[in-house]
Length: 217
Image (cartoon, rainbow, N blue to C red; front, side, top):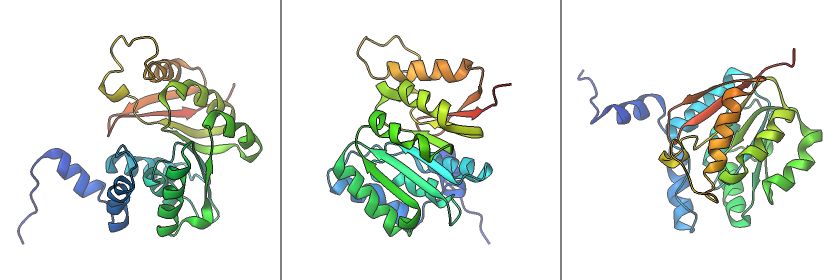
C-alpha cells in the first residue's frame, strides 16, 4: 500500500493531527456566507485547545469572543457530559450563528452563548467559577482586562489561553498609541512575568499564549 504524501509540512501537520470533521469544515464558510468575518482560529489551534482542556480534565470553560462558534465546538467537545461552556459575544448576529453551530454539533445542552460586552458580562460570572480554562479571543485592547478576571476566577492548576498572541505578526514591533494590538503586547508581558503563572507560546495559527495558574504560596 502506497504511503500518503503531502505538499508541505503544514498540510501534513493539519491533515494528520488536526483534521476537521465535516461539521467543522462547514462552520466558517457558512459564517462567511452570512456576512461574518473569516477570522476564526486555525484547525491546529482548535485541536490544541481541545488537547489542553482534556489534559486538565476541564469541566467549566469560559470563552471571550464566540464569532461563529468554531473554537467553541473544539472546546465544548473536550467537556464531559456534565461540563459547562460559557461564551461571551458582543455581536448578537455572531452569537446567534454560534448557538446554531454549537447545537448542530450536539452541544446545546452544555453551552451558553451570552450577548454583551465581555468586560461587563464577566462581572456576573464570578459566582459561576472558578473556571478550569479561560480562552481569550476577543477585542485585543481589552486582553489585559480579561486577564485580570481570569487571574481571579481560574482555579489553581487551570489554564488561561489567549489567541493572536503574535499580534497578527506585529507584536514584536513598536505600535502606535491607539493600536488595539498594544493590548496583546501588555498581555504577553504580564503573563510572561506574573508570579502566579507559568506561561509560554504555542506557535500554531496566530499563536496561543498558554498560562498555567499556580497557587499563592
